[in-house]
Length: 600
Image (cartoon, rainbow, N blue to C red; front, side, top):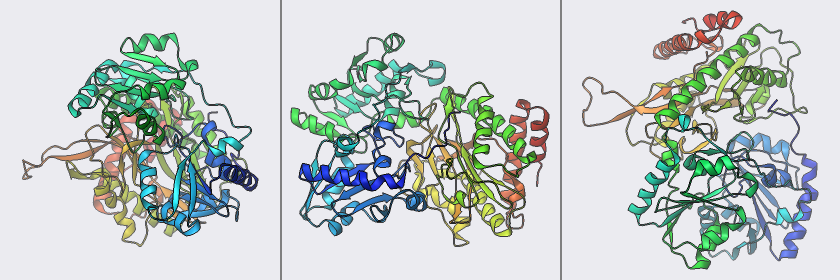
């Protein structure tokens, strides 16, 4: 099994660890310390070595941070984790803070007044610290870069990861890394930049057509790269990660350095050097300033080319999704026929992972499977453990959100399952969530719009009933990379225009705390839309291609609430599922698929 079911943290461990941190703060002469979720690469998922937020507070969500002061420690979490954080941190030692409604600047002004707040400059992006500095202007509170105080008191901190870096096959990447380097080097020349410092792990992996194993579920290496305008690259990674195969793959245009050389290599650059304020650590800016090197703020040059997938990447992702769909259908066929008495959330997770393993192509799961039954389904990012494992009960809805990492693509799919017959309220909510997903699936939109312009289409059916959900409608997805990829998103806050080839999730939901949750998710690809008769010939439009093909349980629908256009879309979708996936199934699974895709 890839997934484990241990309890990753204990709330009772938090207070003594916080006390030790406060002693370190006092010894350092500071009044506070900021503990982020992120690592030096600003990734959503972190290695055990970098799980400082979870170690200190007990909170294991994928986003958030803690500000520890002498007499209060705020744990800042967004709407996905409001319930979870209450269960994982020990009160009153830690105080949950609703973020981003409450921002750290005003919170510090209220709870500290004046003083010195330290932070590790390698773990915070420039834009984050600049925004907080501005928010504290005139307050008497100073932000102080400092050696990491959590590391100073974490006695059994795991070692940094040292996974081998592997070449990624050209047949799946679609473009040699030498061509990517040359193409992006031209953009640096055009901008008048001598180099760009690339710190996002998935950007480094994409640029050089390499993969790694330093982050659970995400096949990326811990490494930094410096892309030069002369079409060469400096790659900085721990020596243990480097193999002969990698040296051969990278060739003469990529210079290899140990990770410990990062500061010296950066200080040796001549400017102007591009750094991305959204992801580049403050420490890198400090090195450049120390060397007197001109700094040019600009976007990571890899981030948009990585997001707009090549034809080979899209073709591979389509195949990965069909393979994954067949595994999902085998699991769902088993679930439909199983005696659910005595089954638990862990049983479902194990059975689904086994179905994916049976493809003989699964390299990892793309994230820990979310399997929340009944009230657990109301936790959008619930992770089942031996302690929380719940037996299925009559009337439960189950939010089952899962995915696989295959060499040719990364999958992510959510289906809501029912145990027995759901009630009318659950059916109505399920139908509204599906209507929102269908609205995005059918959408045509003018070229140049961003996710912030589309997000409301998914919410409108819920809004009409006085409901909403506290997460974005969709995130970007990589190609055998991170299952959560930026900058593309379907979200109220995403201003990145959607481009052809971007892969996103389409996953509206609804969550009733203490009762049930619902989420339905397909992955979609942005593509150009054909012109319509009578349309404006001067105006280009985009649309989405759905690439997830797994039945949606029509037995949970309120058919009177479902509109005619929604019904037609669902029937057409299920016809496509049958056509594409049936040839990959036999026996009971094939019979189940035929039944599950009958038109309504």
